[in-house]
Image (cartoon, rainbow over all chains, first blue to last red; front, side, top):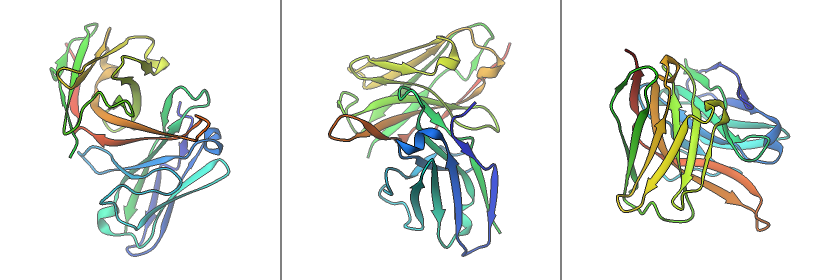
Length: 108
Length: 128
């Protein structure tokens, strides 16, 4: 079982803001990284570290952490943001890598 | 631009050993900053980290795979590889290779790990 817990699904109206959360004990020590995956495609890194975006990733995506919960916020959600989103970090031993179970984001 | 490309047989019989290779282009696999990882995704399910390898040969792998995994690196070909023994239908998945980066405080304590480049993935089916 994953040490990172995500809500299975969330929906957002077009143009509105949605927050996806990732909960885990290690997130007090490690930042979560976030990936977007569209059907039939490989995951794409969208946020890492305190709140860093790789080149080419829209500034609609932002990350934050509070206690043991990391969040990915999509501000002004667009139709193309409809995808599965995964968080990852290290496990409690610090030796292994874990992923959250993923959150399916639907843009209405 | 860094690119990763997985290659493999597509179909493996139960109890056999799967072998996958990831070819890296656009940068050297021997850069000490990075590890190189294998991640899989069963159909309709989430991502599972299999393991990671440094060009020096240092590895870390997921204990849930019960030591069935062997990873290796070939710096002359800029490739790294995965072998997984005693496969079953539960190993059917899309297998991705990815570059792993990790950030450290000055004290050497890690505070962030992420996969910034991924291959397109290859579907491996275990079936007789």
